[in-house]
Length: 452
Image (cartoon, rainbow, N blue to C red; front, side, top):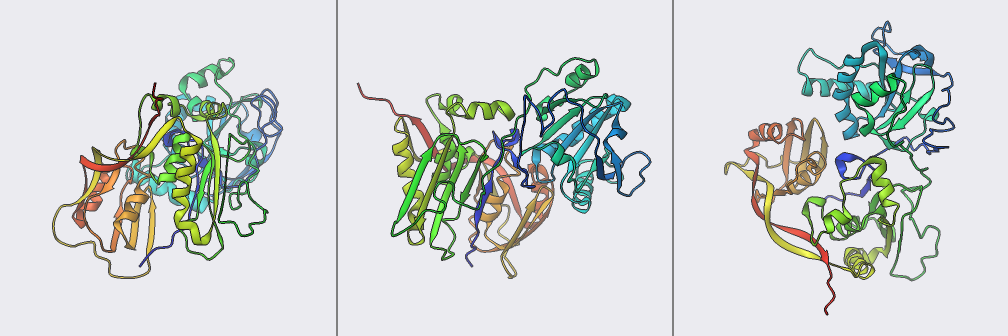
């Protein structure tokens, strides 16, 4: 059975995704006013008093949810951590904040703030605690869930997002995760100015469900339209593609917002970063190791592009080929193509000839998060595709070398970013990931040298 999956991705600035971050799914429009300010509050302004609802784990609050005035935290350096359960770098910061909270005790208060409900966050925390700490142990920080107050006071578009409020109730800084350190906390406690770049989010004025360039235009009898531009503010970074869907809607599109040149070519050739080779020094030139505000500033200096291709539904099977040809024309200084190269890869293999994965039937379904996976009537290629996100920290391409062509059922409980835990869970199905040389189709981008 062919699975019809609508492919729509929102990609944002985040160190763990080389320049991508997680989307603030609140849909809140960010408005950064002044130098490093947040909402209408500027660095150096006194933060107004507000009543915070959905507080749990606070001293004397018991196990229920309470409401507290922001002034309840006065007298301490208050660091608000805006996060979400789906934000990998946010989750990675939890243990670090626990350690810093213990070190600074009553002088500092970390307060995680989530727009998600207590039910969702609590269930996530229980799984995370069991996976990271073991039975009977838990994280100690209080938290805010179901927040609708602080997010309006401190508007933002990307996560993680940290707001530093001094013991005097004055806004000291608005930063990304890179600024949360022992040294910076000590500096603020000593009365020094935080010597880091302030986080500045753009406003989000783009509806990702609509075309970027061609909304409201008369399609007429055209077969396709396309447009390429430089960096556009207030639309974020992301990818939308529905050309692989059979919907009968009439028009299909591929849209890339504020992507680098290699990212545009990856979209056109349907390849990931691990399947890309940048030669002739292009790696350092086109994909520097930057994150957070530094990466966004670098993009704005003529290194990002917006592209949109819209095709008649009957020509959607030609969309990627059209995009490839156009990009090669747009960027004549590079040669781009697919080459099969022998590289080290993380390959899924079978450890026996016994078939323990054949589906027992049912509607195709796949659920995969950081704690495990459940696949019903799916191809192993779907499993490999979904693993790209949790295994993004692995530098090797992740491929399927089982040779299994049928539909499968899998149910795994594991830290999906850990190869060791993943292999332990796969053992019951006689499957395993191994590092081995393999012939992999790679996207190769090199400079086009002019003949003399």
